Length: 217
Image 1: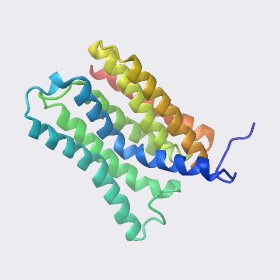
Image 2: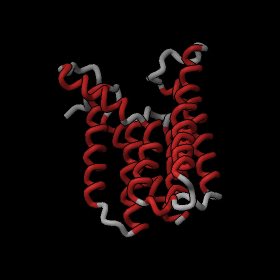
Image 3: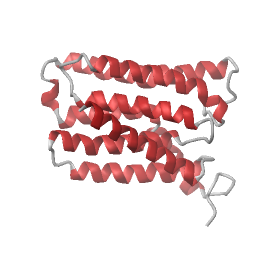
Image 4: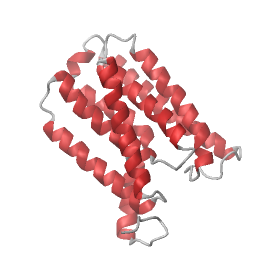
């Protein structure tokens, strides 16, 4: 069976929801979603800070891992360094990869010194940093799926959170696995990724989280 690309036509009933899912679960939003998940699941890990400080912490996560990288992509597009904000070619992805790597490394560096937030954030940030490094290297050979890396990393992180805290997160792991499948299917429908590129993204995201966990926790 041949791999599906955007050269094949799909019904708007499929492509419109697929595009919406791709935006809602954009890779840049995943660190913020994971932080929100930890706030809900392990609130006792944030006992050392006030509610206001927690909101500021959440805002800083979004600011550093989503807004600044997205703004950098916007500037590259406006300055004509890229043809599209959607980064459709491998060449256009090189600088955004490097910029995102810097912010993810910075989040890991900060997390090592925080004692008023979950310790698991150390391995999570290191994992997403490692995934961007791997993505940059593999980008020289094929256009690995960023969405695949992001949702694969989030799925692995939730499973590892359950292991570390010994929490019964079976329902959330199931939901995460379902969302991972939905997001990847959406990329099959509305992107020019091949199946192999999406699966490679999943493999990189999952493996980097596992490696970071076993080395740091």
